[in-house]
Length: 248
Length: 248
DNA sequence: CCCGCTGCGTACGTCACCGCACAGAAGCGC
DNA sequence: GCGCTTCTGTGCGGTGACGTACGCAGCGGG
Image (cartoon, rainbow over all chains, first blue to last red; front, top):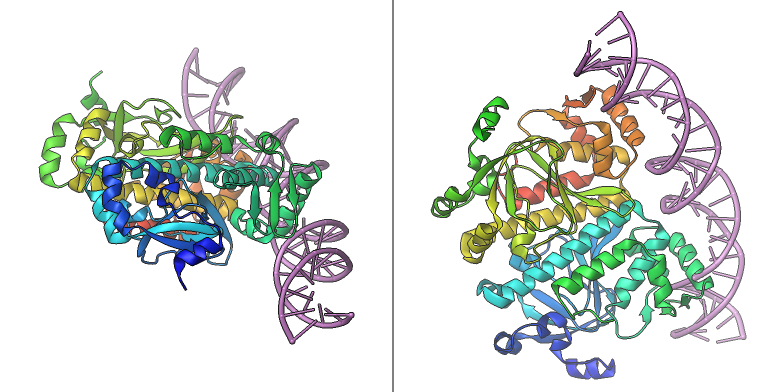
């Protein structure tokens, strides 16, 4: 099947520089990259790389959202960070490790682009703006991971759900998430029933509308009020390090 | 007061390359660095940098251990990573952010060395082995943070205490930690009483000996058996990325 | 149309950890 | 030795999340 046709079918945008990291590249660099950048469809659940596995490509989501998920021996899991149109999947390619101990899964279907590992690595090693941009992004990602650790320790499921919704919302065009409660539970590393209850409270309060795997956010301001400080800290750090990459 | 005298008093080693990151530098690079590297005493509780604060130096512990601690609004806190003789404090200097949202506190008194921020940054920007070494270290630190996040979510206080003891032990010469239960609780982000109980169990089982702020580890193998997978994962990743930097 | 699948709501007992409160024990200065 | 501070041990009620087990409701296919 023709990839471009598929994209049309899903009404997905084909401009690679919808990805804010690619958009932040100086034109001179982008000119070198663009021949190698290829579009990919990113359906829900697609695994971009497995823990410890070899990465063939780096991914740049545009409309999709990808979760970095850590899976424990016994099957329990937890999301350690989320990446959307502001970022890249595969930082360990240039950090030098080749692999990561986490798994990257598409959390919200959409489109993206990819680049062969070798291309990214040689571009990174040229130094200059590419290197600094990627490292600044990594620093922002690092903040998100640290905050996730603290949040897991100290904050309630209700607060964490709000945080998670907001993080996802920041990486979407609209205010609708296609996502079952079981999947959210998986991301947050909690029970599915816990999410049902927390989401029920938000629904009752009129902040969101939940209908069989489709969440509509109705009152974003109230969500921000209910969540813990973690969301604001992470958001602020992204804005500081990568100005203009996240919407709103 | 004379710094060297202080160091003698504490019987601390004055060789900067006791720090494994410095030791891993090629001799040619080290020759350039060494004039700028100055010894520092790192007493318990010393704050190397504050959340959001400006960093004047990067630190390279030799016998000291430093915790990266995140402090929440209400005073609650959690450790997100620990750094000893295998690493560096101040990665955000070269990652591009200048500051971090965490605090660096000396967790176990000892010695270390430091380097002016500007020197580190120019050395990093030369690219080559220095850059790749520092990035590989950062990647290992990243793994530690991710694992901390998951551990906070899924594992019991008992397991986490064992993990914490082992991580600290790996960064010490002997098997004795100078550390009150209140401080450990602070690091783990739990109640002091919880640590008392968990440590009591380990004491009763003969794995450690606890005496007013001094922990002696008696049976390391058993500790490893009681902890969660998180310790092994992190250890393995450090060994893979930075071979030979951690003892044992 | 009915069946079956998937997603959501509810209920109940259990448990780890929390917050608080207080008592004993070890070290230190005088 | 005395008194103070610091550190550690213990006890008790509260609670948020867990594991388990069902019931029900939308939705699509045979």
